[in-house]
Length: 146
Image 1 (cartoon, helix red, strand yellow):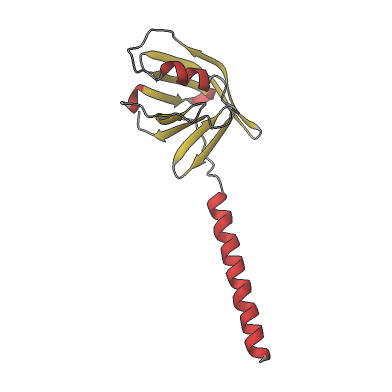
Image 2 (image 1 turned 60 degrees about the horizontal axis):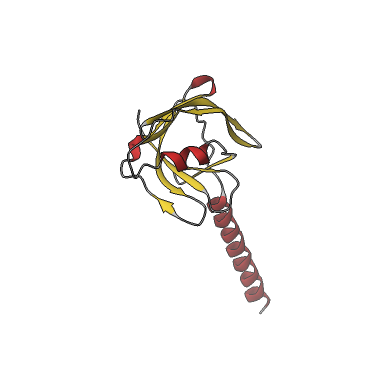
């Protein structure tokens, strides 16, 4: 009887450690150095829970260059500035966008309003997620070649 109890204890302990390892691995964020990477918008969640997906994701790009320089496009507009990836958060400073009037259906206005206030960045399953502290607001980007 004692052998059965001991083997049951060992089995339960092994299962517990296996479960904890799996949960820890699933919750772990990927660490990615942004320098010389290029990303295009995949989805944009805005206040109110609305989800927008661009018709042509290549129109909405962020290009992270050396020396913390940012370039990119937001539909018919150009984005420039600097980015700072820090342990305590993420920010653009300055964040500049041209102000051309894009065609109807453009995501430009919402995108730049969110991007200018980005304060957190996370990488999961090969995608980059940016947030600005407002509940439910999230930008999802996918990696792309230049």
